[in-house]
Image (cartoon, rainbow, N blue to C red; front, side, top):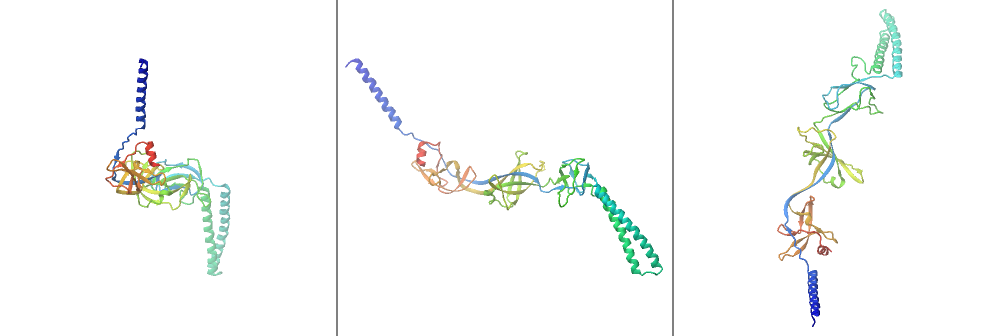
Length: 370
């Protein structure tokens, strides 16, 4: 055999061995190792978050008792007031037609009064002489007294139209008085603005709004899927956006009996009394979130939700538990409450079981699931 032929045979042999090694490695199955975890006992709390705001429990709007123009504003927004404090004064600008009409009524009643007085004096002289009876004289006297009272009423009406009030209480209607103690939240008018009194056809102009800032409530909304789990008197925690790192305790006291549709979902209004801290000043209208406990399970057997898999056909949850020989068997579970991280296990595993920690999805895992 020539030297060249030997070289060719050696090259072929080397290539053959290399091919055998390559095919052997390709067909060899990789061994996948899994870590395990055991179930544990913990407290699982299922919560929901309601978005809303904090508002005063007691808030009123002050409206004028007469139409006019704001003459002077005594206080500023944010001022503390006591019941009866003067907030502003209103200057009456009378309607000319009404003023003339009221003045005409006064003049007419004066004429009637003058005539009644003449009749009264004449009847008195006749009664003193015994010409007329007492009953006739008393009827004339009654008409005279009624005429005097009519004149007084007409004059009061005239002064109310002209000045806004009558008699010694001339400032009663033109003075805007605080109707409760608290803080002035807003004064939406300024000096010179025209204001309208409240009546059956008009709500009237708001001159000031006052609230007791020591009593605040949380107002928010929850979804219809969660409202059925809420109970009056439940303890909740309120987080205020403007105050970081502080949660205020509150007690749920109102759940709306009727919901409103918003964005395709039905929302129900809730209210809760907030316990304030003297270290913080809470302003009306702060946006806030309320953490509401829907369900709480103490010291229950649990596993991490990351250990769960779901059967593609039955959609039942399951895990794989390690057997004594190191292999894993499938266990279907019955689950309870979940907080998004841990889930309660009612049936399927024991606290001593070793549960597979799933690695990143591999082709073998996908075949098992199918």
